[in-house]
Length: 191
Image (cartoon, rainbow, N blue to C red):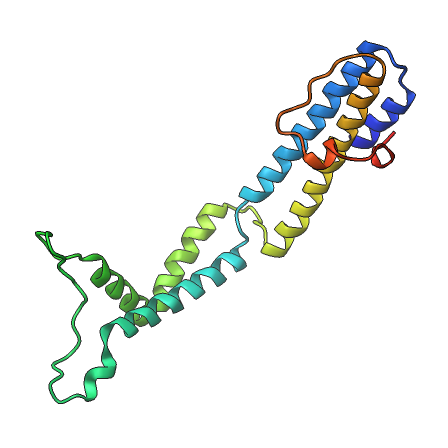
């Protein structure tokens, strides 16, 4: 798309209609490239990456639960057993149940990990619904390419704007235009 736009730009004459049409095409190319980048950012993870994150969460949740129970005090003679952390803060009418519930969730993750993981894996599979998803590495590569496409389209847009201005046509720049394109040296612009 961008290469076609640049070929058209090189072949074009300085007529205002041609330049403005090219500018519209360049701005459409910028918008399409930005939409592709946004779609890549929001694409779901692949199943393996998602399950690796679930495993890390299960490990962290179980470890935090055991740590919060204070089992290290079991060697003390006055220890009577663990209790769930349910602090009551001044002014509260009931205890804060969140820390205790987090401990219970961690203990469930510790004692019933495989079943919990299977349930979550099923949810992930349902969410993906046959879509392949994207690993972090693939997302990074595709996002880099999309950002490159955005910059190329913005540089082409800036080249067209400068050509129009040189022909005496006043053109407003987009408010979200990249400063890299706006400040680019003429030699670095396509065309």
